[in-house]
Image (cartoon, rainbow, N blue to C red; front, side):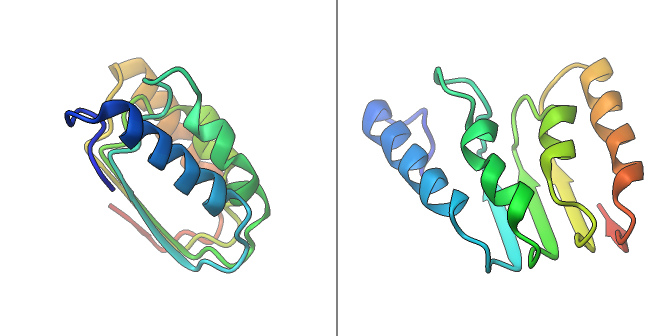
Length: 116
């Protein structure tokens, strides 16, 4: 995924949102890696766009979030987590309180076998 800090920021943001909207309708992805996930930095809450994917994809088994800036507990709770077995959260921004709340949501992940 392109970095929104590049010169062509507006086009990059538009492409990212189009990708996320396309992903939102998918129900077959089993393994997903998202990098540079700017949750709401550019005027639209990306987690809201992705919500249908995470709520309704019963096939998702592995999720890797790298540089998921401003990752929220609400976002983690939106994931249909009863099927997630592998979760990797790397370099997610936010203050200590927000991160503690986000991590505490992991107790709802009953099938989780690996967390890193």
